Image (cartoon, rainbow, N blue to C red):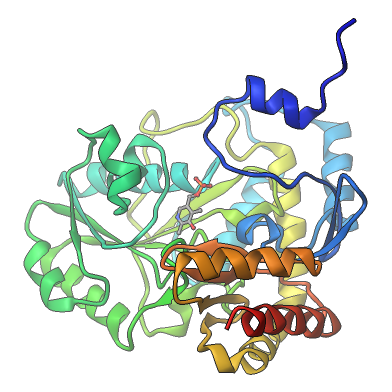
Length: 383
Ligand SMILES: *Cc1c(COP(=O)(O)O)cnc(C)c1O
């Protein structure tokens, strides 16, 4: 008789080996998740900066269920319930006058949309992006993603992209030319290990883009949706981007992304589209997510400061609830994450041996104290 296999065993046998993982989470509520054995964790990973309203936020669950009972899918041949309302809201959040939004199914697809839009409206073909920058894994977004280990096996990729050192305006000046459609930039490099832009960097990128007629494309997939204490990172600077890409937190965990582009940068009929993107359930979830973030936005800097102050001995960097702590080397970084997990707190290891902390934006001060104490303990234990 065949024995019933666990879903872990089934994955090991039947699922492509694209991920290395061992923990199975089966339930979430607020800032906490539970594994298959009932062990509870305070989740400072939040689906990698996705579960911004906490796990299974009841208002979001209601919005999803109510919309699912009305209309699940209708296609782009017809107006989509709530899509106009969401587009207005997202455009207002960006603060870009006369802008328009377009929805996608992910961050990578948002950046693919930005690539297409920049190419078709500027008539130029090439891009410039930064060393250690991450913009996604579709063929287009991968072409502007730096990490050679994940990009080079898939060469040749389109579009042609030149990578310059993050923060280096002189190198950028040289790299951007009359064939550059756009410059992709993160204000805080997320996957690289929460690396904030140097002072004045965004203003410098803006100036070079203006001088050379290239579009400044701000990838806010990780830093956006309130994570840094404002809706988008660039709002801490003096500049306005030409295109903003958004995803991760926008719909509390449902697959959605967006681009917002300034006045005059729009797709015309037939130039872009997607079967599922911006569907009714996604729009309903996103509108409710935005309402909840709005309520939490004034508290985010203070919450971030609690992490920063509590862990100041270990040189944390970042902004708001997007925090990275250098662990020195990969071995210690993994050891720290493992000890935190054992003690009931989930954190994740980003590049450059960084402990990444990107909890739900709704995390409470009590929960932050609990997280800080466990993370502090893990740094001490591995010192
Ligand atoms: C996660 C991420 C992406 C890719 O988003 P997906 O939804 O995984 O395609 C792009 N840019 C940045 C900055 C990200 O953090």
